[in-house]
Length: 304
Length: 304
Image 1: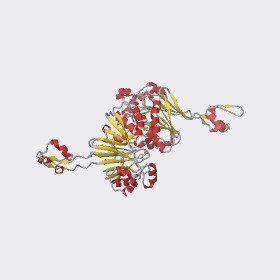
Image 2: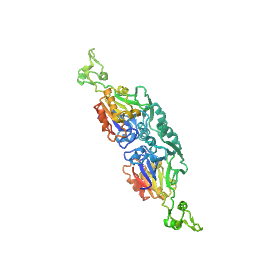
Image 3: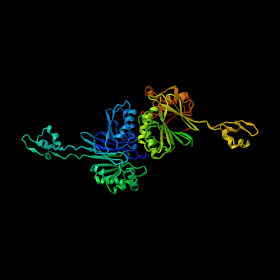
Image 4: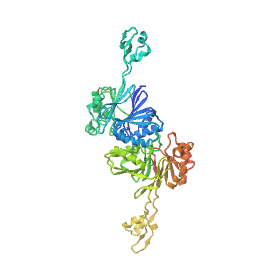
């Protein structure tokens, strides 16, 4: 099982349908869960996907439209009922905190965990979360209200030691972690053994970017340059290109243009308008521009 | 089709399951919709039940626990997207208004309809809504926070005119509505024709009461005396009677005792704890006390 994956809980747009839930997905990074957007019904989505509330510690909200955040009170209340402890950190544009803080404080009194709100700047790229192995960055998107995207980047991994060489040079254990980090080894008699003779390259580090909601803007391609997987909104097809621009949304083809410009590995389309009973025309339009593309759906799991 | 019915959209309790939605139901009275409680997902429940947002003008919240009101922001936002006009009136305990008002005002700017909040007193019986044909009353329930139940009472209907007699006495059209209301007819020569010779009894007027959440309390039976259908919470079975009392809830048997004391026509049980995968033991326990009882489920329609 991959140790870095994303599960889609909702990939519909503002108007609810019986086919799609509002925006919500969960990044599983080595067993820790990170939610991106929290549309209504996020809590039941987690149960359906068998994702444990107890592992969720960070919730990243992109913007303050209801279909991206109305699930928050219900999710936090239920996590409280479950007796989750510690801290849950919620990242969102600053003015949302003034609105959610009193609402959550009222409904979630006597909570067994602390809800910490962290404001996210929608003007500048920003590191919003970091630990030993993962960095989460926010970056500006271009929607009708302040909006950010998020990138999850696995940190550079350590190089693999060559066991034979470690034994051959009789390298002490205390030096191994420096060598895995790329240092050369100096023998007791002063000979320098270059790192490349002792190790092979680390596994590649994976990265995932989430862009929803945004109008087509080349700056987005710059922001997500080279990520392995890009989830990008594709609210409309070609026929509603003008409406997309007016409403601060993208077409599937525009999402693919961002993917192509950014040179990403794979594109996943989501945030579908309710008008599409079948989203395959969106897929076809995107594929004319970028080949490795698929449609999101509820329950889909993306391995990184 | 009945002109007075109730559709259950959610009959689970606080902890969400994949089987039950949180509390929400819709009274359809002659084509106008009245929602009672508005748990998360009320908006999709309405779509599933094919109930039109445009017909919903009044939302009655019983108390300020999330599983009875977290669906409100999503529902109102979606109704706004649909372009509903006019006024939507939301009834709830007063302190909820201070919490919901700023939240709704922030998220539902530029709404095509007005959201009017009306405080409901949880200490005294109160008429909260009235028109020509329907009265909605609130009455105290006994839960961990201020909580009310609601009764929907069809007003007394007009008597049926006997067409033959109307023709026989050659009664002018202008007098008919007074006669349907029960007045006698005085002929031009002064003879009094008693109403009973001109009309037959009106159809009976139906009534529906909603009690959730509440601990067992005989005052509730007094409040719902004689209604045709009583929806009563039955969070637990006999084995959790003590827990029910502690948490401000009722057992199925206690719900049936209220129904029996109140002499209602029919009892519907709901607000089931997540611990029951199968609620038939609750039904069996209730039936030992009151015969005409059934279990609520999502999509159930109760005709009055």
